[in-house]
Length: 637
Image 1 (cartoon, rainbow, N blue to C red):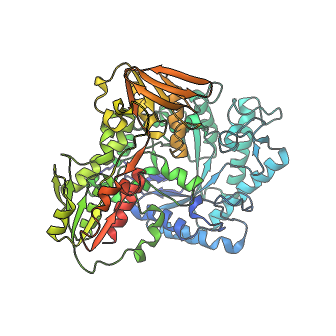
Image 2 (spheres, one colour):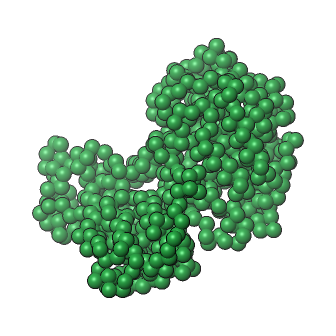
Image 3 (cartoon, rainbow, N blue to C red):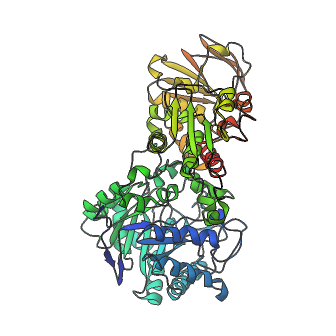
């Protein structure tokens, strides 16, 4: 058997789990319109993980207390009789594929309550107010009630989120628990309330449900939970819990990248926490490794080496819901790699439509069966441009049976993703570029590189359809001397030719990442931005990560509300709020944005009966939009 350690069964209490893969919970706020039960979008999302082969599927959305609709979050009601019917159906649909159904109960209180005054709400920024004892008892009863109802509805497990310094987890940490009653102070007192909740749950469900707890093994904050303290907490939990997830960090902006590992960290950076739990010799509960684990090879090694008993995966299963069956079939190169951009998190928590940068179907998966049009006629298709949009369009059209030729004017494919191979904190994006190129190579797409195809040639060749993905070019503002600046996209791979001091004009995401990259290479970098904040175009979580990294980089200087007035070989002249200032530099990098190659793209109109303009050649945006429009173009030919 491939991945025999990962795929081996294991018994948890009275439950036999068919393998060691846990599909970790995802809160589908943007898939909800206020329903007090899982809608079909949520049902499909979680059931798909069971169908793909996960041993445990953790669902998310049930509330501990009667649901109060705040107009934003998903909330499934465990108090109204007819609201629970769909939950029972969800559990049974998961069971259909041999998986165990678990439900997350997240440790959030209503009314702005936290463990003690000064603790932060879920945004990681806003102080809450200390939850009084009567409310604590009400929530304890709510946990016990929720567990009992989930047991009656056919769920096998309960997942308790007691980590990341969310309100209930704040009881555990000496950094966040400043209570003066019996629930604060000593370790025993800090553990008292979570243990009372666990005891109340066990009294209601016995061993019918397995209990899994996510906790921060290390909060990475001075005065907070460290690994030794985390070990003590896990030992206390195992009196009632069957499993513990060794997560880490807090929901504060500076630790999002650690709690949800991004590419500013190496692969699998949090697995050592699970290993520490296993090696302690004092934790007999099953231990789960978590944190950006993206493939079955790494997961199998974690189990084989005894580092953990389970591996939890979330974002990787969003990027490619078929990750497990593809890998088991020996098709690892066909697995779409997660780029760890956190777009899924931001879209489902802060947005209105669940999205993924590399999976264009994730928000509409449950509708695809009747949305995808039939192929009534196979066509000869020309795709102009070998960037991410063009490659995805070509792959999608070819998979549909069309005869596709892809034209790329440079010698290699990749377009706007080529830069990623030069940046150490873009290794996952570089891997996605390599994935696309590999998929093109093994497909039936006819690829012609090193040739810029003209509209006249397309028309003369008689293609039935043309997809135009010619990309964008740097936007050049009217600044004296700007012609001496180097465009950001042209600086990658040529860093050794730059001087020791660099000014980056433009503090959007591209400018910030370019400046950070050069600073990490030893350059003294100044970024100037006209707006009042850096990287405002980045998604929330990624912006938090960028800002944290920039704040920690001593070779980086940031100016906001600053306008570049002139560029010369000596540097730039800028207008700051306090007046004009010269900033010396060996080189000036321009990152003022991109503009679509509209004129070139429009020249392909009427060269074929069907013409579509996609990606940056329509409007410069993100890789997410390039992939989505490439998919839409290819699927609708």
